[in-house]
Amino acid sequence: DSGVTQTPKHLITATGQRVTLRCSPRSGDLSVYWYQQSLDQGLQFLIQYYNGEERAKGNILERFSAQQFPDLHSELNLSSLELGDSALYFCASSALDRANNEQFFGPGTRLTVL
Amino acid sequence: SQKIEQNSEALNIQEGKTATLTCNYTNYSPAYLQWYRQDPGRGPVFLLLIRENEKEKRKERLKVTFDTTLKQSLFHITASQPADSATYLCALEDTGRRALTFGSGTRLQVQP
Image (cartoon, rainbow over all chains, first blue to last red; front, side):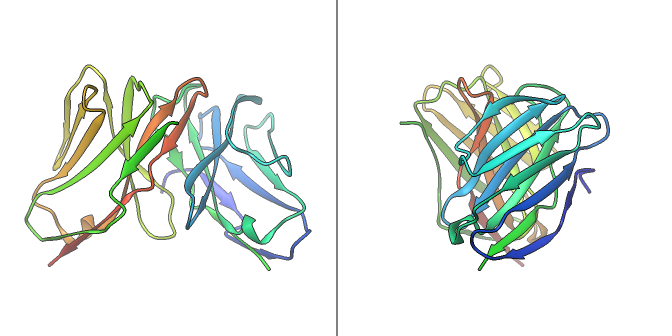
């Protein structure tokens, strides 16, 4: 158990809908990272927050947004969903605001868009 | 363009042998490299981090080498066990983006 929690575990929705994925980092970790993993794309970095501020951005679509709250939990919002958004979404946390330290991954949310 | 390459073909070895996985990269100048293990449907788990000046790092049955001239890292598991069967991912810092970029991973299958 990494100490990172993600809800829900599974999500099934329809095209055009909007969903919110939630992540709680390990106790004491200030950085939260979001990744998307699909079969054909591998693990893709989406966005990072550190202590409430956006710190790094990957190839995140404009339809996607995220935020980190004062209690350090984070939410990833996906809107106008398309079939291609079906994937595993992972949240990871780390203590520091830089990539050269280990990241602790949550169990993921499996999103299926029908 | 930047690229991280790991052998997409599964590596099948017999229990007790040494598994060697390769990570090659182009157009990166990483100061460090990380290796993660991922089991099906689960989140990656951090294994080792090696810095550019370390050349080799060990942790129990794991050994990682880092050759910045060849732009390659090798990941070894000695005395492999069926429980070592998983996908192994290497990751580099994406220069200027303060984020990790992961390779596509190599699936290791250890036969009893």
